[in-house]
Length: 124
Image (spheres, rainbow, N blue to C red):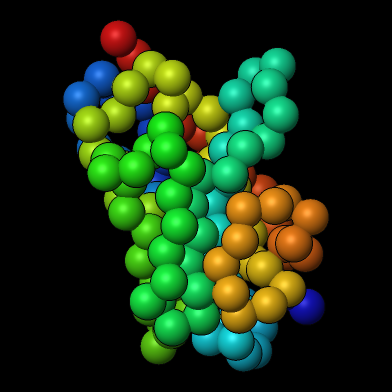
């Protein structure tokens, strides 16, 4: 059984930074791509960033490109999301997810394990 546990959310002001972390239990962490998604109230869950098994391949939503950085440590079974220059529109619950394959991807349907989410609130 795979468990994903996010941490690092909180309340910040616009322009501030936050670092989210996701710890994964279970085997073969390095065999799967990982992703971050977010869901704001009244909106559908949306893709934020993904990273391939080795950490070389990374993909970002246009809305976060050049502000957010996804990374992973396969020795610690963790994936992180460094969020800089935060904006009020970044306010959402952020979810870590494990993909069914090694390659990064944007569709939630390609991810079969999800964390419980961590709240990020950015005030103006």
